[in-house]
Image 1 (cartoon, helix red, strand yellow):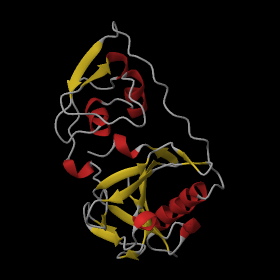
Image 2 (cartoon, helix red, strand yellow; image 1 turned 135 degrees about the vertical axis):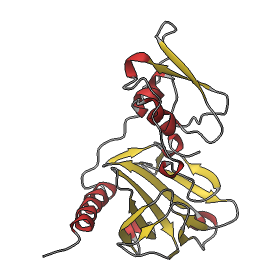
Image 3 (cartoon, rainbow, N blue to C red; image 1 turned 90 degrees about the vertical axis):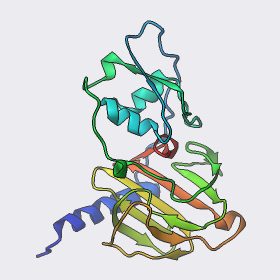
Length: 225
């Protein structure tokens, strides 16, 4: 009998997740509808502070992230800025009190760099379900959030060494195009710990990064500070 049933379940989830990535059970990506929020829509405004993300703000008020982006007319290629006012409509709020959260729940950039391919962008007739990052200097790849390694491949779908982390709350992150990997399946990793490295240059020196909620691709820009 298998003792670590939690790990087995995580691996099973990762297998399904990989089947989605490989196109075996993929769902066409549909970008959020961009609509201007009605001026008479009752609610409150949240002023964005340094380091805050749309995901953190949505959790603070118990609001669905996709609905928050829709009513604020925030597109996939738009990032929020310090001082920006975000409308929190009353009908979307599930709690009156602001929800307490810990910084450890937030995602961080796996590597500092320039986004060269955006979420939802079509490249070679394929929709990008993550973002592609060209590192500025350091090519060490860090865990975007604490979690457990549930999948590791030496060359998944031609994307080089690929790592998937299960964050235990329905979220997964994927790191592809790595050259060196410093973790193995079953390892627990802390947010910010180095899990891989890119050694190539040019297009071979990029990182493909995804955030998924279950099997659904999320726009990483909404989650990253």
